[in-house]
Image (cartoon, rainbow, N blue to C red; front, side, top):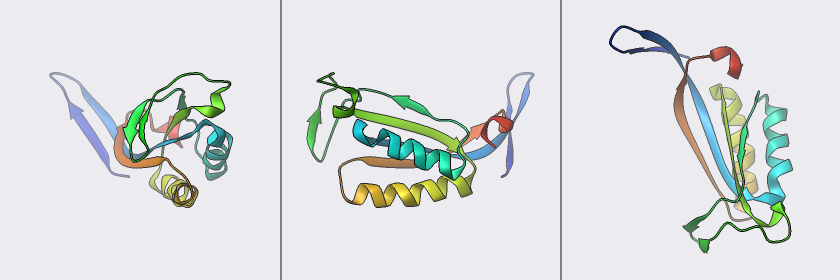
Length: 116
């Protein structure tokens, strides 16, 4: 990936382009999505529980009902383009049959070794 630089007043930080995937799904799909990420080579991810929002299905309020599987979650991962592209293909298939969204965007990271 292309190396970028942030030039502050007196500091230059080398940055490396990567891709970030953010997926919002039902908590019942957490293991499926995280397994897919691990199988694709993601070195780590963040899970945000009890996500609230508004979309095609109307308003969704985060509240703990009986267990975490009944709520929406967001899973975020950063990895090289080839890894995120592979994950995005699998997530697209998953999301065709149920509600949920996926976002893929370019990001820049300072510690490349954390993501490869």
